[in-house]
Length: 196
Ligand code: ZN
Image 1 (cartoon, rainbow, N blue to C red):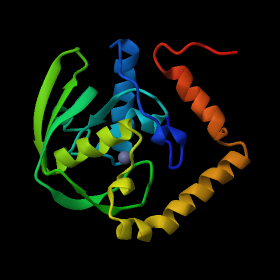
Image 2: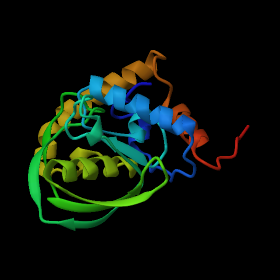
Image 3: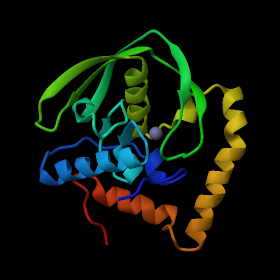
Image 4: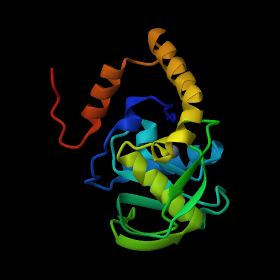
């Protein structure tokens, strides 16, 4: 399991709802937490593993020892947003890139946990920011899409570097073509019909 980098097409994919909670999903989520900790992340969305599924995980402490702070959000929906705050964000799919993003200061999020129980959480500050960032991933939205035009323009040379790097890996065959990656995403969607 590997975190994909920008501009992998999975990062622009609109994820499909989870229909079944099974042992495979639980195992996958356990592995995602482990991967998130070794990469020093505090949130990780399924898209970032090239999976077209509507869920993300979070541990705002970033510490594996604080497992009580682990949260899994299956089929999440942000039902309320309040206030506004600007702060710096980064993303495991754009390592080393940071920028100021304005987001709601407080959110209410509705989701299902791994037991299939629906829950609603009111979150503030960092946790509110993380769930907005991760929820955006599920819609194929990246944090720099939310930045001001001026701030984004400053990041553009770095984004171009990511692009060059990615295309180079595709040219060398280390990463499949966009078409093949998109086909792979489609085949992982629930109810996907295999095509010849
Ligand atoms: Zn991210």
